Amino acid sequence: MMITSKELAQAVSKRRTFAIISHPDAGKTTITEQLLLFGGVVREAGTVKGRGSSNFAKSDWMEIEQKRGISVTSSVMQFDYDGKRINILDTPGHEDFSEDTYRTLMAVDSAVMVIDGAKGIEPQTRKLFQICKMRGIPIFTFINKFDRDAREPLDLMNEIEETLGIETYPMDWPIGMGRQFLGVYDRFNKRVALTHPADPDQPYLPLGDDGMVAGDNPIAGEGEWQDTLDGIELIEMAGTEFDEAKIAAGDQTPVFFGSALTNFGVKTFLETYLKFAPAPSPHKQDDGTAVEPLAPEFSGFVFKIQANMNPKHRDRIAFVRICSGEFIRGMDVTLERTGKPLRLSNVTEFMANTRENVETAVAGDIIGLYDTGNFQIGDSIYTGKQAVKFEKLPQFTPELFVRVSAKNVMKQKSFHKGITQLVQEGAVQLYQSYTTNDYILGAVGQLQFEVFKFRMQNEYNSEVIMEPLGSKTARWIDLEQLDPKMASSRNMLVKDRNGDPLFLFENQFAENWFKQKYPDVKLTAKL
Ligand code: GDP
Image 1 (cartoon, protein in one colour):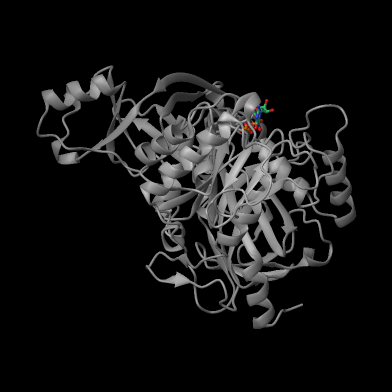
Image 2: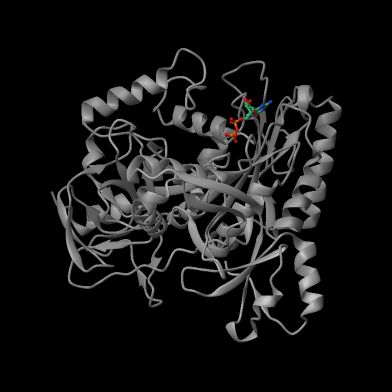
């Protein structure tokens, strides 16, 4: 069924597609659970990761899966709230950290940054933030765990501004913390929200024009309340204006405080977020032009390929962000890289809490295509005569390296085949030693190596030996300036897939030493 252009416009305008970025343990899972709870997708919190024995969410999903004949994964979660269709894309921050995580951020229209109130900005948050910043997408901040002792809110604001270089606009301000976390002063909604209201149905105290509680204020006598008023005065004096244009450009982040574990502040966050989060925006093509989400022809790009989602079938799923038009099951598209036609019949969509719309996916949504080896990361697909080629997805400079070889020297053929295909897919990056031609793999996270090893064994019947080389800094060097004698055990000389030479420096010290020794040699980092 084709939808009209008016229906398409309506459907697209409802889409909100985002990722949560955070350092492990900041509370991403807990917040996601709360959001799914509000969206009616799960009935009980504490179930997304399958914790505990009463595993409601899991069985719900399996039921949905059977009924609809679709497969559900936690990589993308879709639900409806407040008239919006929300797609949350998972960005594993944990041991699963990999390039997929970065590339997923290419497929969202905004990001939610979750920060642990006691820890502030942590390394993974910073890395992920930088990708969002580079894309200029809006970033909304939730500072979590205020039910525990946290850092002073002003201190946290300063840290965000200084270490990330983004202006903050506190949408609310905490009243106390830890056991004395009494609530938040909600500047934006002009109310005080209490963590422990006398009447649970009345959690809010409206604020008057003077910024004071209009009626009775049960916490007026508390020292925390006075501190909050002082804090509010300070931030008002600082004079940052709430600026929608800056937010849209990723130059200002609205900041919220709360406690996901006690479900305080998450709903206000979601509702306010949905007011300002952008609907699907145009996507850039390779030639600099953009594809509008309301363009009538379908287009999208593969941002992630996940293998072995179901261990029983050796399946791979290519995740596609739809950038324009409508997806219809069974439609024929062109794969830009090869120019060949493909039929999209074996497709997975992601759970929604309403049944009616399952068949419709439009710009902003994510679909999963069962892949038998057709797709590579970064591939564009489209309908219509006009070819669509989206901007290249960034490759990230690997930080971890291993030397890899086939365990059984008699099986070189499957070893080479496996390496070639997995590298094409973008699973890991391949280098070769400049002199010995040994294979060296680079990745941004350890998991990529483990997946590589597993897949080599399972899909190519090739057992590999990996010798860890540890973390290195990759720096490219001009061929003209290269003298192989410059290499040492502390700066290995290798070549990349294109044959371009680079050094893998053991650490900053080794790099500085090199720069002093060869001041005229230009070293470049590639992002
Ligand atoms: P993730 O690694 O970012 O997904 O973090 P999780 O959501 O799994 O949370 C990590 C730990 O912090 C878990 O033990 C949570 O129960 C706990 N946690 C999450 N949010 C809060 C919060 O608001 N307050 C407190 N005290 N603990 C929290």
